Length: 623
Image (cartoon, rainbow, N blue to C red; front, side):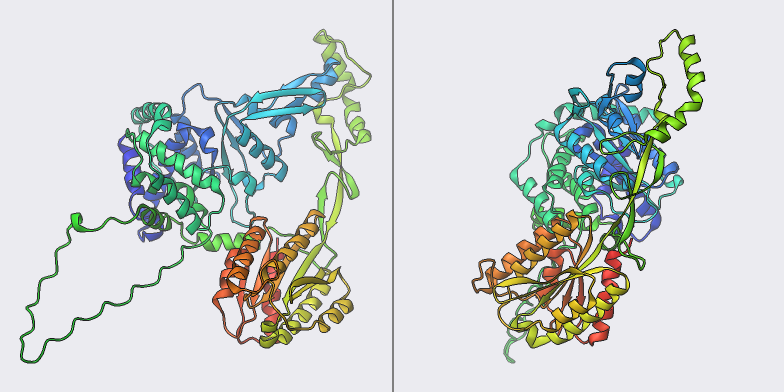
């Protein structure tokens, strides 16, 4: 396996982020892609799948052909279109066949047909939340459970998923419920076909033999506890919170060792696993360690003594260089493999994907469940979808003579007066407007009142006017003392909002954890109703009361960080405005844990403050 070994050696070198030569960087990226294809072919269901970000073209097709050549010939392969109905994905009642046969007819879904193989999900960046959730359930359980429409079946479905991300930009973030279950992540955008060479057929056959051999022994590869600790610590340092990726990297490290013909995991295997699984999902850079204090200079000799003779510096001896801990080695390798601009891309994806209001009350959303009817269109029947009977019969009526002659020619008996086919189904569409709500959470404690509470009030008042122009709803919460109060429920009344804001007193303790939890609860309530919510937190980040209302900065900060972490994991979109006289570390740490857009505003006046926050809110609300 010469080409695959070369790809593995490329992964042991500094990542593409450190490479200036585009040709060398392209070779490293393609080598990583070949390595990922070989490892994914060992056990697709264990790794869950691979998120392949690449536009339609020869580069993506070349990688897919390479992966297909590495799989055994009898491996099931299926393709999942974007708008696949549940009956075809999971299985269920075949309505058209049932109407034709006059009895319930069940059909197997794509996932059950692909048991033991691989499914390819087209346009994965646009997959619906319902389809992503159903795929995630099957990946977790390894089986398909169908219990509806008179069908009750449980079929095995251990599959691996190749999710094809064809987005030209990162405006639409993928469904997290699905990406968390796909262990590998590849980005092939920017590669040219001439930079993606596929090994010859004979070498691919050698790869396949090694892959089949690794498939039977990778679970028996030995390892020590330091390997798992290093991978989990690397994931935590890079902001990868889900424990699934640490487990996926651990399994991948054992596969790397098995593919290389070894029976024990070493540091290079962990490095490869961290680069292929953890680095592409990094959300932050690891904290920089404080520099060592300079060593004390030796005392100068007295004037009557000659200085000691200068000694030549010791030559670099690889045997005398102390080994770094495995955790540091894996973290450095993963940090080097973070693609250029990835963190900026992740921050941009946070700012996108929300609904935008163009001067109207909320955003119009087309759906098939509730709202104002806006006509019908051809579609498939799914749970909750309303069939438009009149349009369905109107579409089927002209074809009745031809369909009856076809059945008579085939010797079949036509059941019923009207012969219906799936192409005849028309479903009713509805239009519903979703509310856009901006939730202001204002720190009214003693420290905030001492700093810039009046200035923050003025900025919020300007933002209220901006929300009124866009017909957004606003809500106001304030925290001081031992609690956080909802001063103003969601409303469009500019007068009520200004009156509530003007009467907001200042002083008391800073219950930061309670404020974040209260804002998160209101965010959850509004989100469940279908609102698009953005939380604007105006504070200096210095909490001094814990969740129980007891004083103590250490415990108060720990509780605030825990509450912020829970809010971030729920997907709460937020902006943190640091109202300290100068940007402080407390606000930066809280914003990072909250996943919020950080706005340090040490010298801005009221109008500048309002303009900056308004730009942040509009960015988070932009589609």
